[in-house]
Image 1 (cartoon, rainbow, N blue to C red):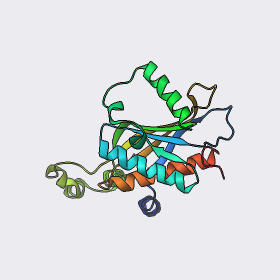
Image 2: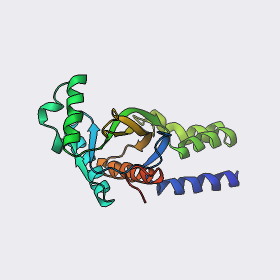
Image 3: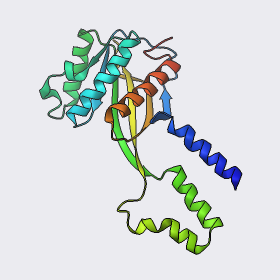
Image 4: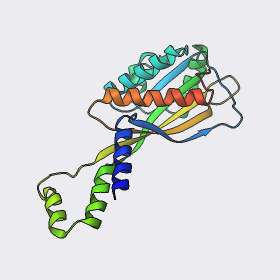
Length: 212
């Protein structure tokens, strides 16, 4: 039991200093070993305009620090562009417009889902108390559940990020796509910052955009 307590304690301490985001799965085009772009368009797909602006600004600035010329879609698109759904023909016209403006890549991110999870220490408490305590101690230690409006939990967002090449002769070719989980906190800027760190790190490891 003591060994288990020590192990769980170390895990909790370790995780408390972790980033709130992590790469879950990814796909890389097998035909693409390395890719460097002259100009990248950063698009955050969300109806929340403030969040979109903050996200695109953070990612664009991080790419700029890596000597990648990145432009926010909020600066490139006219307001009317995202106010209505675009047709395939209009998106093809946009691709031509991007090529004329010197773009050769697009980084696009969207939230694809969310999960509610129970903290590790809460799971441990339930298991340990169920095994080693008497009814009265177990009940005493958990009776707050009758009074708490919501049990302890946290929300994790699943984001999907795609890197497309819009090079001449290639029709919006997918170079890389990854799922990054982001733990929700009250500080959305921190969430975006941690997500961006994970994204840049992953792009470096795959020799995409940010080539070391």
